[in-house]
Image (cartoon, rainbow, N blue to C red; front, top):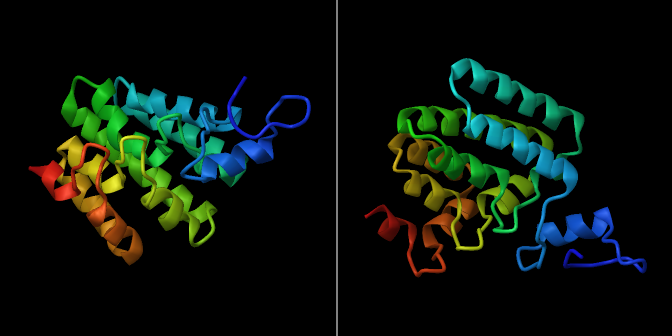
Length: 186
């Protein structure tokens, strides 16, 4: 049985699962089926074997986001990773060729940011995506720094500059291990 809010028959309602998933302190453990399908497309992109394969996977993501409710963009994994966090770190875990991982990460990040800005309410993107803390306490800037890809760090900083509160939160964030973003960079 999944943890969280349940209906009388023991099954968690979609509304309850979504509400819990948005709450940073929730005990939410899994993404809904649609959000998990989106994650499967993200993983396919992270495991792309070449540019053509990557482009096909990115097209699948665009289409899938367009035909589904924007709520799938807000859901996080059991580790509290958003799809945006995934774009910043998973390509580097999946690819041996780190240059190709950088390309994947950048293109996936750009696509997700574009779709999230277009589909989410004005305050949702900076508050729920850019200020999302993973289970380990990482925010998007920590994830970008950890990738060791200077262009991605610059891209994330430029994005955060559009949202001063999110920039401040990222700069002042301390991970579960006690590191601030600049300490992590060293």
